[in-house]
Structure formats: structure tokens, C-alpha cells
Image (cartoon, rainbow, N blue to C red; front, side):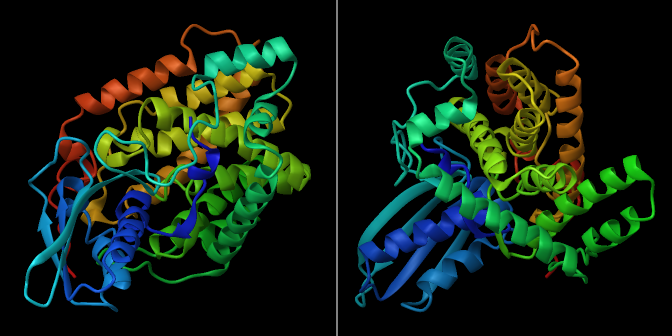
Amino acid sequence: MNSIKEIFRIGAGPSSSHTMGPQRAAKIFLERNPRSASFKVSLFGSLAATGKGHLTDKAILEVLEPHAPVQIEWLPKIFLPFHPNAMTFCAINSENEVLDTWTVYSIGGGALSEENRPPIGEISDVYDMSHLSDILRWCEHSGRSYWEYVEEREGVDIWEYLSEVWKNMKECIQRGLDTEGVLPGPLNLRRKAADYFIQAGGYKEALRDRGLLFAYALAVSEENASGHTIVTAPTCGACGVLPAVLYHLQKNRGFSDMRIFRALATAGLIGNIVKTNASISGAEVGCQGEVGVACAMASGAATQLLGGSPAQIEYAAEMGLEHHLGMTCDPVCGLVQIPCIERNAYAAARALDSHLYASFSDGIHRVSFDKVVEVMKQTGHDLPSLYKETGEGGLAKDYTQTD
């Protein structure tokens, strides 16, 4: 299993698979072909279907266009067999001859893969266990916790990386709370984070806490929708859930940064297990692989922060994912706005509910987290493609990009 650094990528939104991945692919291809006279990029399947709303073309053009003219071909009805997010880069010389072609897949969370090969550039074989049940047994046998397993496998340098992750998460929340106006795109969707933050102060403690949690999740998701810097957790579309929960708990309970870093380590481990054994790509398994996994990560992290046992942490993560099974990825107009932004706020609240439910238990339950991951993968495969980030089904049906 790879490093959890691949779960927490710092970069520009609005989509890890449709923006970060294609931009990274364009940089790799340009390095291979720096003297090309022109480029042609063919986008397939889900990558083409919602690419305009996700700024896929802009991300690619920012890299290639300063060097040579670029033609982008949109092929939303053609799905290559390995993954729905496929793209082919073509380098052309001044005589209009093809110098190089490269087909690569954006497999979720900003990761890239060539067919049937390990993800490009990821730090592999860091972890010797890739199922939470095995790691739970390790915790119970050794008396240690999940974050200690992360430290053992990643080394102490992981804390410096997670410090930078937490710094960017907090800055994103603060920017989002301070910014008002309308999000980019044809929906003319008004930002809500600042309003929720202000209104929350007028309620008594329980409602105030829930309102602030909503505000923090909205702040991050609205920054993502604006194409600003966020941290994938595990994706751009689900980037508001984990930081909202951790920021809220730190503000309320005064947890030190080091305890937050340890919670991030556990959350990253949970997300990494899903990425390894199933998928975090909305185009492959629907929104259950994005917001559902983010909720599982935040549920486990919150339970650890609030004193839960390893078994209770596993149970909370299991519930966070189980109760998002079957969730479709149906972005209106291909934008990471409706229903994505509200889903982040709801999932943040559900994460704290999952923690609370698990904390009343002894951690023993029938359905394991690993089983839910297995079911999520199969459910994703069973979902029709129109419910997996193509903008053709569900809430997205009958809406079209107009600008």
C-alpha cells in the first residue's frame, strides 16, 4: 500500500480527477516532448462528459499552450476499458507528423496510471498491511494505535508533511469564511459559508456547534469550487469533510496540533485502504467513493481524537462509509457545486454522528470496514455510467453547460 501522502495532495480545485490529474499528465507529457510544434489531447468518457464544468481543458491548456498550440477533442461517449477517466496526448512536429502518443488514466485523488501499471510517481510498498481488520489486530496485539502504525511505516518525516497539510486546510477554511459573492459557472450559486458562520453565533450551544461545522465544510468546498488551493481528502470534491470536523474539534476542545496530525494520519490510513482495495474516483464508483470515504476518514479521526479505542475507530469509519453506499455522482452542469458542496456539510455532521454512535458501543459489530469497502467497490461497478460523473443522470439530468 502506498504512502498516505497520496491521499492528501495540496493543489488547485475543483476536481482531483478532472483537474489535478490532467494537469499533472500534461506536465509529464510536456517534459517528454518539449520541442513539439503542436499538441492534440483527446478526452474520453467521464473526463470528457463533465470536463468543461470541472475546468479540465483549462488545466491542460495552462501547461501546454504557452509552448505550442493545443487541440482538445471531447469524446464523452467513448469509454476506454481500464478506467472512465482516460486521455490521450499526442505531440506533433512542424511537418504535422506524430512524434509521441500517450494514453493515461486519472484514477482519482489526482493519481495517474497507465493501464495495468502502478500509479505514476507514487511511493509504493510503504505499508505491509492493506486491510483495516489486519491493522486493528496489530493495534490490539501491540497496544498501539493506528497513527503509530503510520509513523512506523512512513517514518517521523510524515509529521512535517501533515503539518503542511493542516496549515493548508486551516487557511482554506479561513479564506472561505471571509469570502462572499457568487461561485464561478452558469449556476450563479451564492457562497453560503460566511452567512452560516455568522448565523451560527445566534443559536444556543448545540445548534451553534452544528452551524459552525456546516460553515467550515462549506468554506472549504466553496474554495474548491472556485478553483483555489485545497487539500484532497481524499478528493477535491470531498475536500470539505475532514478539515471541517478537525477544525471544529480543535476550536471546541483545544486539541494540540500534534493530536490533529495524528488524527490526520489515521484518516489518511482509512482513505488509503479504500483507494487500494476499491476506488476513490467518482467516475468509477460514484460519490460513495468520494464523500462516503471522506466521511469514513473524518469519523475515524474524530473518534480517535475523542478517546475512542482502535475497535471504536474502525466501527465509526465503517458507519461513515456504509451509510453512503450507493451514493451517485451527479454534478449539475458538470460543476463541483450541486450537490457536492451540501454533501460535504452533511457528511461532516454524519461523521460526528458516527463517532457518537461508536462511542456508545464496545466497538464490536457484525459488518467490518473491509467488508463495506468490498461492497462499495461492487456497488460502484453495478451503478450505470450515467450515475458516475457523466452529468447525464440523477440530479444532473436535463441540465446543460451554458457558458
